[in-house]
Image 1 (cartoon, rainbow, N blue to C red):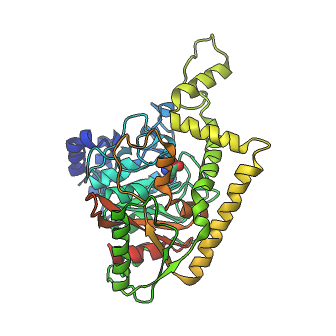
Image 2 (image 1 turned 90 degrees about the vertical axis):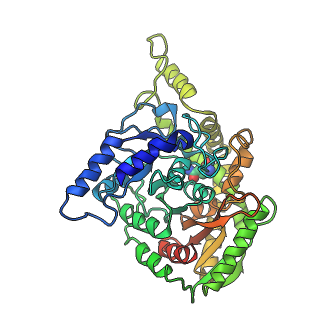
Image 3 (image 1 turned 180 degrees about the horizontal axis):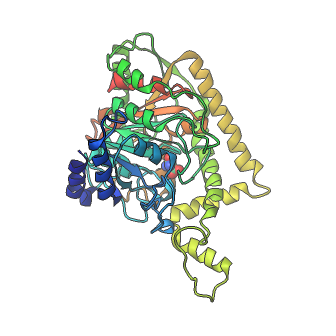
Length: 454
Ligand code: GLN
């Protein structure tokens, strides 16, 4: 199976460019160990996977899509990587991404964009475009992405695959190169909800190496997916978020969403409309909180400890080496975020920007709490539009940021959320995603509803 996927990668990745690094030798060795073991070590033993290049892999390059980390070989495995290896999952390679996971199209990768397998002229979403595209292009049956504001769900939606952002703290962040520590969460990309559940159970669970890891049992997501596959949602209450429609949403996306809601009703779910008035402030709050945390997290790339170092010629001071290296190593979007974040955190502005954004974050959490008193899950389109053309939004950061308008609230509140394929748009024939959101630690509800729907 691993060899077949390596062959497929060799065949199509010149067109898709989902991978930054393919580890054929390591993947085949892991597959061989599974073949030779007396018994499978997990339900996924021998099922190969593509790993987003933001998770550290001992002995295998980890670039985060940045020149800054080009050539860096981590000395340790992320907890997610370790769990995959222990479960006998061969790691095919590392997937392309927007630099340090900042973006919605994978065009911010320093190593060139990934192409959407449905239409090579279009983006595969981002930041985890490589992971979702590898699954959509049958280069890998499973992948791991990370989702800070939508980077698993939005690529899932636009490539017609399943993407899950687990509850914050449900999957360890140890070895996940930090973008925005209070939002980042790794999770599964797959072609079916049950596949995603099987992967979820392999990578989730408490980890003492991550101080924000939740010390609670992993929600029973595989059992929930199997329950959902029976196709009966009687007794399940679904809330349609009224804020996520209207201006900026394509007709094809909205019609697909209406169809999805009708189908949930046919499956027996009770559907009601729910208003979450603070969700309209999620995007501006996110674009203060995420850059603030990024400006602090990326300070570690100081030319001394990792990767790139320029002007190290004895003629420049240490400070000049740092500054010239950061100038050369970071792309324009990363620099924009560092500047925004540094400004928002600076004395005199901190309360007005960062402080206000944190208050909005609390209001969004309260909206979720109020909604989940009435319903079991909330639903919305995952993205306002289908995959746009490569190059279309690169010069317009606001248009790019709007791609995540529906996915960001779940990150700010720390909830669980999933994107499940919802057919093709009747406007352009491209994939559309249905977003399902559940309370923190109720990830199993996503899998039950998602599996019943898909
Ligand atoms: N597109 C959002 C951003 O650029 C989300 C990215 C992510 O989830 N990593 O910040």
